[in-house]
Length: 249
Length: 252
Image (cartoon, rainbow over all chains, first blue to last red; front, side, top):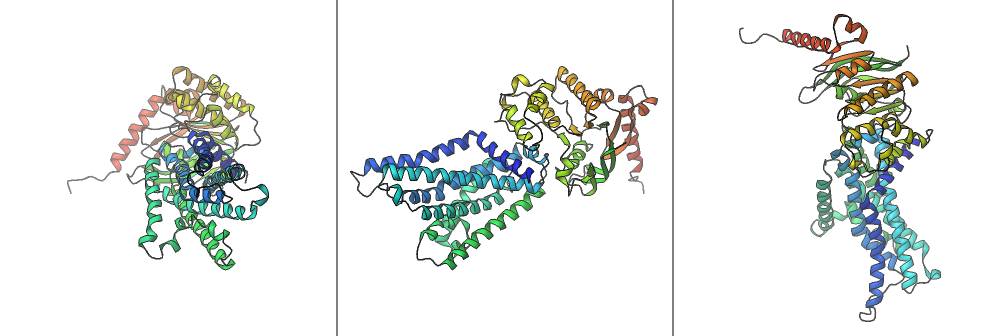
């Protein structure tokens, strides 16, 4: 357990030491502020735009669709293919931590980084909503937002597991990045051409949090979709680990 | 004497048919064991299997009585190593990297970082990013990281690659000091035969994946003027032996 903690802490520290991670977090905090300021400025000319009470949820849609997938593509490329190409994987594997521990540490660090990005987004969008919009602290639906962000986190972490698996086939970070973006775009467009594709694709769950906000969705459907997301996560993590375990550093 | 490492029947064959074959090796406490062999003889493969970086086709490795294959964490707890080239996360500083290493050993305090950087003469560069380091400086940092966790066994693969003369002398003194003062066991693979002659009490010679000769340096030198003479002689014998083993071809 100590080794897993140390491994996870190290992976998180390595993420923080990379300037692009800090840049991504900074940009993620600034985008909602920029949009909120723009909405306020344009409200007098285009009345439809406003920083409403649902601003944190509107931003969640933008982030789960584009920003967070882009973030975890970058993070995964550093965690796996980059470690192979720069021959630094052995630095972790030569410490008293099992292969499974080293892999789990990377997955936990990835999950923690996604969670941190979502917490940052929640704080910034709520602040924008209160300071620049119509929402007051008393009117905020804390429970609803909490559910939506938790569902957003689960769907993003589960989707990242698909790309963790895919990354095991690559020895170059750039090659993986390009392929991941194309694969994600293809998975997003596929439901328009292949009937029933979205039912079996974790990429179709980027707006899964909407189900949790809806009052008309049965708890049975919520449970079924939750089990699908969790089983997809476990399946791809297991496949990813099987390949990682066979790697020769 | 206490057994630190035991390698039994270790075999690994790559697609190009190179690798190691049926290696048996034992390291006893306090040994400084030199592993000699030409390029491609299998020295790095042996060290990589001993540290779990690659898996053998056959055979086992036990460090401190723990099997590397299924008790890895316990086997590696008292091991420091430097395998192949000194590669690092180049965006971190030397002290940040050593802190990452230290996270795996909560019983060791932060002051150890200053201590090990002092050992290898990198104290003035503690805050510098590794991307600005020369090959020799990276090699020194790898050595510092290897001895960081107060190990009882240190495995070093070509540790003097890229080091200048001062660095080589510093390395030799460090190994001698740690061996004498702390009784650390070393397994060093190197081409620097004169270094190994001065440092090691035992050597093994690898040729085409086989451990063709092994023994105490003092015994091996009893019939040869230097370890280099002995080494060349053993390689020649091994090659002749291989030629004799090959079936005659052509005139059936």
